[in-house]
Length: 287
Image (cartoon, helix red, strand yellow):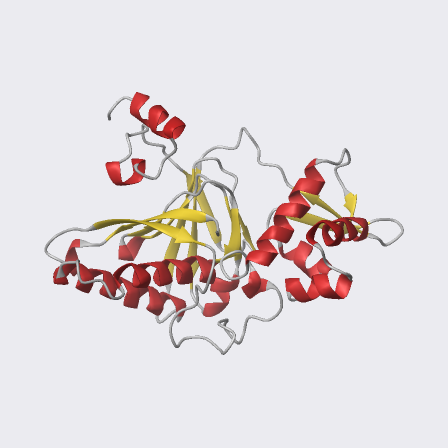
């Protein structure tokens, strides 16, 4: 089973006389490509190497990243030489050699490390590649990050999305909600996964009102338009922990985020909680 993140969709009133709110489970497993918009392998032709294989499109890369982070956390040094860590990842994940590992990544080990927003790389005095995993700053203030998406190249930026962070497309009144763990993916994959899950939610369903299906279908088509960047749009990341990172981050505007008092989740959300999470939610005062 793949990781699942809650997808919250509030369809704008302009799409329907009745405002709809949909709570879905956003899976990182399986095909998240959009219909008829990509190449034979389900990725954009201009996206070469490991970039299209991140979490939303390739679970194997996410497992490698998880293993890398666990190994790093177990080591006492801030900077680690990259090659021995690659050997440890190969051993733990069952890869026979470096070629097999790089085939899984879709590129070199160095390119993979250098492309991660939360990983820094450098060369030491012996010209060995070293890296460190950036730790979240517990004192970082809540912030809102805004990116103006002007072209398809912007969608291949990589986003380290903190568990508490949410992605908003303001002009669509569309939100991808918080997750239970960090996620590292391209902006393209975040949007494509949302489109795929919405399409799956209504595909073949006979129990849904026609008005509801039309509203969801319109949102799906609007998301497909975002993937083609038919016109520039703003993508907003609300980051309560101040831990999310875009790479590259040029053109990303950061402003303070005012946090609202915690509200009790709706029943549809509470149904997906563990008993401990539900008890904690019920203990919160209603806002």
